[in-house]
Each structure stands twice: as C-alpha cells, then as structure tokens.
Image (cartoon, rainbow, N blue to C red; front, side):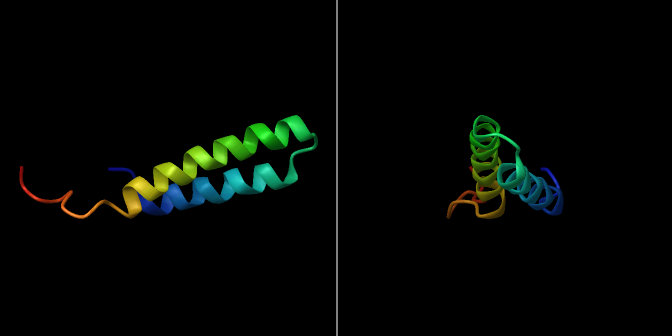
Length: 55
C-alpha cells in the first residue's frame, strides 16, 4: 500500500499545478490529473466499510 503522506503530497502538488499553469488548456489537463489523484487518495485513505473483513 502506498504511503498516505506521499499521496497527500502528490494531491497537493497536482492542485498547485492546476492553479498555476500558464494556459487554460494546461490548467484543464492538470485539474483532471488532480481529480485522479483525489480519487486515488480517497480510495486508500477512506476505505469502504467492511473492506478489511476477512474474505
């Protein structure tokens, strides 16, 4: 499992790139990448109930 601190750092960097990109197209691309990072963090940091149940 990835390090949760690294995931939050990656998410922060993605948001900063989305905010400070020079062109509108680049901002859109970076915003989409930030959404992917956000979903990734959410899936790992906030697992669904029962996901740790032995199966």
